[in-house]
Length: 125
Image 1 (cartoon, helix red, strand yellow):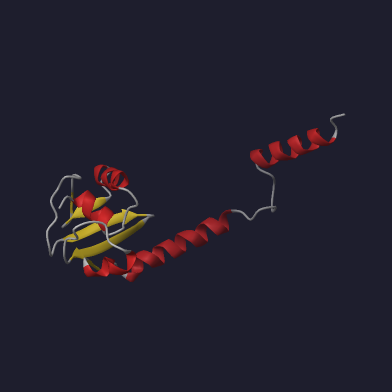
Image 2 (spheres, rainbow, N blue to C red):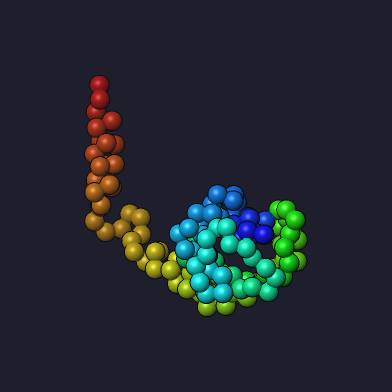
């Protein structure tokens, strides 16, 4: 089975075209090397998928005939993603929150435009 079709069948990507793009951009690795979307995948191979700034690692257990339900996905792959990958995502979320709280500090350029537009709307007669 093609690797892009496998990723679509096991519900890592919503469409095959998105899975194909991920392979072309280098977000999908098979046993540590980048792959083309047409690369054949077999049982026992290790896949690494970079999605939402997390490196998911999985082992192919079996090849599905077609797209499977969410409850049956674990029959076809074994997820071996380390816990540290998810902890890094939590730290990234906290760093975004730290940047600037809404309404604190000096207004940004966008905030200034919004204020000016709001004031202009009040005085149109």
